[in-house]
Structures are given as structure tokens and as C-alpha cells.
Length: 47
Image (cartoon, rainbow, N blue to C red; front, side, top):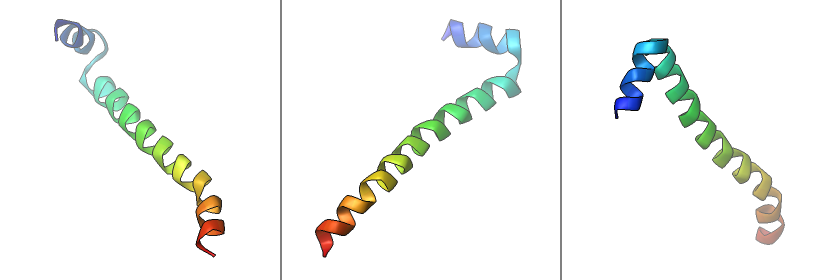
């Protein structure tokens, strides 16, 4: 926790929030990419 607080003091709160949100978006984007890539297989199997 001390590492996070020192990082906030060094770079500023808005930058820390931005980095956190980018990390969260990246993980969700990976899930969307995997879902889109598996879509053709699902469509083939449903016919």
C-alpha cells in the first residue's frame, strides 16, 4: 500500500487513475477479442 501512495505522490492522482482504468479496459478488451475470435467456430457448430 505504501508503494501505491508514494507512486500517487510522485506522478499525481489523475495519472494513477488513468493507468488503473487503462489496465481495467485492457483486461475487458482481451475478453472481447477472445469472444470475437471464437465466434466463427460457434457459428459453424450451431448450423
